[in-house]
Structure formats: C-alpha cells, structure tokens
Length: 239
Image (cartoon, rainbow, N blue to C red; front, side, top):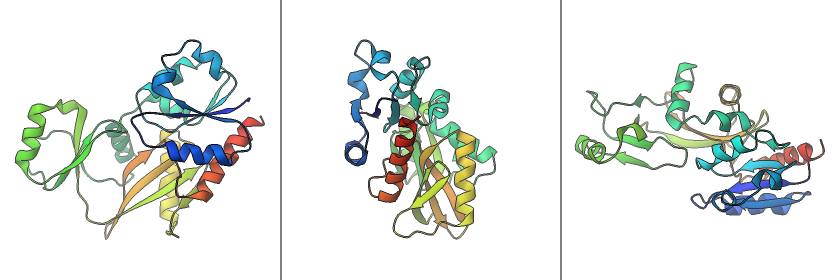
C-alpha cells in the first residue's frame, strides 16, 4: 500500500481527530474532504493501492466504497459501509440478536408512548431531540417524513462510551471494561462486520443498553486507542 487516506465530510466535525492521526503516523497520510473529492475525475486512480479510513457518516461513503470495489484498496469497515444499514436497522438488528437497547417505536401514533422520549433521525449523523409532550411528537411528524425518524425510550442513567479496534476494547477515564462490555462489543463487531468503532451505552440500575454504534470513531481524547488504530493502518501499509 502506498499511503493512507482519511476521508472527512464538511457536515461532521472530525478534522482535529484526523490531524492527530496524520501527525502521529509514520507513513504518508492524506486528509480528503469527500464532498470535493466526489466531484473530481479519476477518483479510483487517485486512491488505487491505498488505505482508506472514513471519519464521516455521509451517504457519499457508500457511493465511494462502491466506486472502489475493483481497486486495490484496503477500506476499514468496508463490509459495513457496503451494506449501508440505517441507524434504525442497526438497532433492530441488535434487538433481534439479544443485545440490550432502549425500546424502539416506529409508529408515533402507538398508544401508551412514555414521555419524555427521544426522536432520532434515521441516519448516522442525523438530528436527535427529546420530546416532552405528545403534542410535540404529533406536530413534528405532521411536518416531516415519518420514515426518516423513529422514537426511542429515554432511560435515566449515565452515558458511557467504549472504543473497539480489531478485538481490543478501550475506555476513557479509567472506566471499567467488564466481561459483559467485552462480550457486547465483540458481538456487535461480528454482527455488523466492523473492525473499528465506538459504542455508546446507557448505564442504569437495569444494566447497560446500547444507544449508538459509530463506525467513524475519531479517538480524539483517547491516545491509546488512536495509537492502536495507527498501528493497524501501518500494519496494512506493510502488506
């Protein structure tokens, strides 16, 4: 492999994370803005024989990954990006495979909805807000396409984040990494075909529930995990 390309989007604030990876790597690392890059000619030729790490969740990721199918590129999380599952599809997949998540509601007219409740856009970098009245939900869905959003129960507890790099798990601030957390992270990795990701849980008296899986982890405040990612990039470069 000749170099590593970190792919960013103008819609997501991951530039500082990309700069940290670039400055620490011992190989050539380019930072590419996907919106500008997709307008250029000979995109496949420019990325030929390189490593790609996506630090964005825009729909353009799927378009670029498909474009590079017949090139000699190594793409982290390639199988995940090819499937292009939405946030809702991922949460439903986790539920189907006995991974604890908050309750998901796809019909805002369903009876007995407990307030407050989260309303989440069905895309990985989408809008999230908390509704405190049923009328807020009804008014919102009268104006927006109901297929682009879903509802998620609110669980009172502490939000905690873990990071996964090729079967190794990291956490900030000496946060405990229990056997349960390890099991869930590895199950999510296998299920979603992910090599690198961050995962958010709500920790409550009922245990840990997964609220988000992000395939574009930046590791900005976690040096150990970022160094591990760089080691993986450099290992692929030597192949």
